[in-house]
Length: 248
Ligand code: SF4
Ligand code: SF4
Ligand code: SF4
Image (cartoon, rainbow, N blue to C red; front, side, top):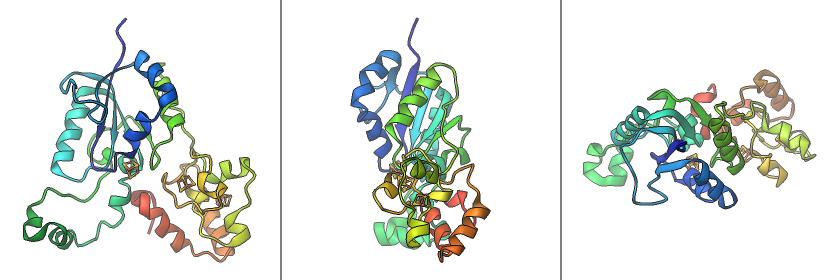
């Protein structure tokens, strides 16, 4: 039986999620034994750029007409399209301030011809095409990627956490930066999966994975207020990575 075909693509982003995939040293041989990676420009130059794909993984936000065309081409080729990374899932850092004076910035960076530059406000993939699954993270976690591939190969939806970073923080028995120190920690509203990496290092969570579906925003807001932290400050932090997921 032939192996399922896959492609891994990058739009506008830092390529960090593709790098995480390449850095799955312990699992890469198993992965290529199970899936036929046909199109992965970051990993090699000999790619089949037109074949049908069972699974396409796409990193980065849509920030140009070229990105949009590339994404539509991938969508047309792929049976299952998976957005990988916060930029692809939420728009990411580049989507932080959609009201920014874009033309002025383009001129500042590219000079008088900046206005002609192919640049659009950042959009998440689901704003442009149908997305089947989303693996968030800035960058994605190796374990989540590998287990998502295993799920997809079994015909299942990837099993990803819906709960907040605080849950993992408590599992690790870390002291709470918010209640003990009054620091602006976005853990109560941010989706878990990073094993509370930052709070475990005594650094407040800045919400790089985007909002948690199961987060109790009303309760978290009350907790922030009680701890002397303005909910607006928290919202501002959360908007850095996932502006769409946070109310002003
Ligand atoms: S989500 Fe983070 S790691 Fe991935 S492309 Fe965007 S900035 Fe880079
Ligand atoms: S608010 Fe931050 S430090 Fe406190 S439990 Fe949640 S993630 Fe941990
Ligand atoms: S703790 Fe927060 S900022 Fe740190 S990796 Fe996890 S989601 Fe991102």
